[in-house]
Length: 92
View 1 (tube, rainbow, N blue to C red):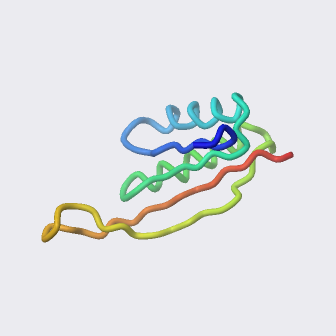
View 2 (cartoon, helix red, strand yellow; view 1 turned 45 degrees about the vertical axis):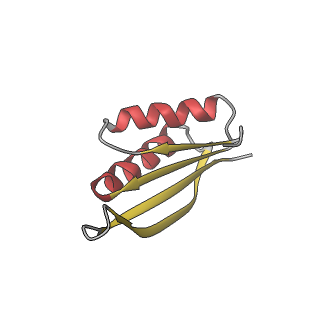
View 3 (cartoon, rainbow, N blue to C red; view 1 turned 60 degrees about the vertical axis):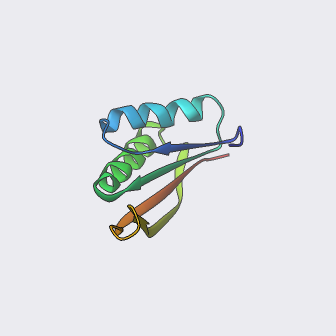
């Protein structure tokens, strides 16, 4: 992982935990933070991105959003799960 980029995997913690992690990354000098989530956590990732964008008061933009689906599970018991990647970037 480059010093100018951080990745945050969104899971079951409250949104505030992920907002704090993203803001901390930006405060420590990261130019870009990537939020990744799958399945039910997708809405949490979107909420996190919006809260960070508002909290940073115009210093952060949503650069890109990638939507995919991934196969997870053991062979024979695989299932397809939606996934999202939200790229937040600090304005220069």
